[in-house]
Amino acid sequence: MLKLLSLLLLTFSFTVVADDDWRTPATENLVYMQLDTGLVVVELAPFMAPKHVAQFKALIKEGFYDGLDFYRVIDGFVAQAGDVNEQKASQHKGALAAEFTRSVATDSDFMLVQSPDFMAPQSGFLYGFPAGRDPDTKQEWLLHCPGTLAMARNNDANSATTDFYITIGQATRHLDRNMSSFGRVIYGMPAIQALHRAELNNSSGVIEDVSKRSKILWIKAAEYVAPAQRISVQVQQQTSAAVAQRLASARTLDNEFFHFKGNGNLDVCYYQLKSRLVTD
Image 1 (cartoon, rainbow, N blue to C red):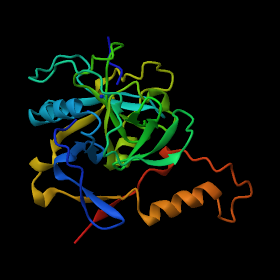
Image 2: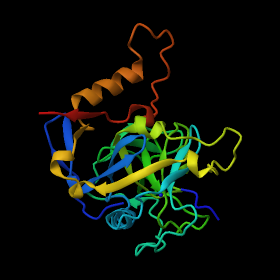
Image 3: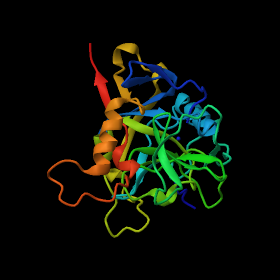
Image 4: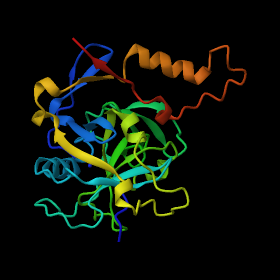
């Protein structure tokens, strides 16, 4: 049975702060993916799914994903990659216990953006990731916004092993709290959006013609990428003045272009924190 949707890391260090407006993600939380469509950089979220991060990094270290492909790509939904035939050997294929949510930690930096959200009691940002929260159950989780990285699985909640997906559509929030999300793309979404898709009438989304699948050339943890070959990517601080101003403007639609000013509600996925390249 095809696995439906999955990714990983160990350490709980989050970032090295660059200034009040931008942060530099910790090197140990970054993964480089060289696809045949371009370079992608992912920031992992060990604070949310530490076991998935750890297994993903172990798979990367042994080169498991190198040469595999994105075999299931559904326009407006997800791009799924891995070993569709489950033939590639690995030391790290154990089934993972689901990490759909976590209990609200005493040091959680959750920043409220919208309450209620259309799929959650609250939504906002958590350590720079779009997140949801339920103050009654005291649970929080990562949202399925464009660029979210998560592990594929079967119907069994605890069946994720190796295959992962990246969200390429806006309308995927029904996957929130149903999948183990453990990262998000902070650089290279054009390369993800350029992946070859299945035909529109292909309900499974699996690209049967192997020659038409987009390839993973290699995936490496950033610490194993030569320093001269790394790129410096920074992400907006969720508490920065620029983010506050952008959200306030979005609530009021204060540009003269807008004649209908909305109702003040926000979809946090549409206002994800921006990234930038830093050059010398």
